[in-house]
Structure formats: structure tokens, C-alpha cells
Figure 1 (cartoon, rainbow, N blue to C red):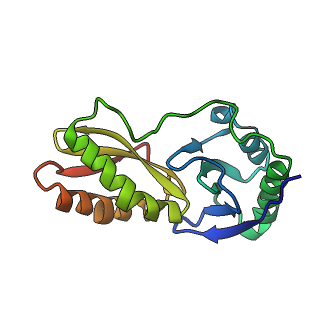
Figure 2: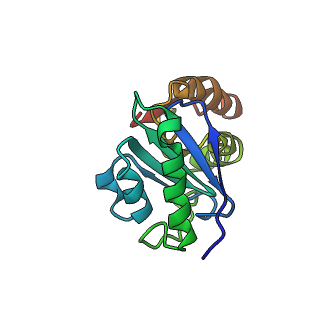
Length: 189
């Protein structure tokens, strides 16, 4: 049996909680977002978490699982059950994901020079801050000065995500790439 220690961290989204594990769950830069049970067919742990009535979303990245609960349910009512479900699952050394993944999500040889710069800025400056709050940001597209990103994990549905997007991400990209970036928008928020 694997030794698993988990601690919980609150984040800006009051309906999300970050459950941090004492080892890496996924390689750096890889994340999985499950907005509902139907999307969690490749993750037995996410399926177990969705069996808890208050669980609305499950997100994995590096050494943490972020769980979003439904409105009207307080964390003290469900946090121990969620934590124990994750702990028991990981102690039994079961696979987190039932699929192979080995490509670097940042690397694409077909990217333009500007897209490579945008991805580099997102990876170096934005991703660590967003991960600290239990979320993730994924580059989606760049066209005519507009950068589209996907906000995942605790960022999805977070009241502070618009401020993060406009005041943080957009301002940084405009400052670092003033001739290229005009706006940053989030898809699927």
C-alpha cells in the first residue's frame, strides 16, 4: 500500500477546494478537467468522486485534485469524505487515468512565432499562479490579436476569474507583446 498524505487548500473560488497530495499525480503541464460524470469515463477516481452527491467538477494537475462542490453545501459537510475517497484510491495505487498521454501540450512545431511566445509567457508567468489556486490555463487559439484560453479546475466558474483574466493575463500579454496581443478571452467559462 502506498503512503498518501493529503492536505486541503482553499482558493479564490469558494465552491472549489484543492486537495494536495505528497507526490506527483501527473507530469508537469498535463491536466485533466472533468466538468461532469459523463466526461469522466477515463478516470475511475473522478467517477468515485462524482458518486458523492455534492461533487460537481473534478480536476487533476501535477500533485493535486481540485474538487468543485454544489452551491448550498458547506465544505465541512463533504471535505472529509472527498479527502478519504482520494486517499483510499491512491493508497491502492490505481491508475488516475485509463489512457496514455505522452505529448508535451505546449509544443507544436506548426505554431507561429507569436503563438510560441504567448505559450511561453502563459507557461512561465501565468500557469504557476493559476496552479497555486487549484486551477489551470490552457492556450486555445490566437487570431487577429485575440488570445483564447480555457480556464480549468477552480478557475472555471470562479467569481475572480474575470479579474484574473483581464487584470492579470491580458495586461501581462499586452505588455510583453504590445504589437501582437489586443485582447484575451476565456472559452467555456
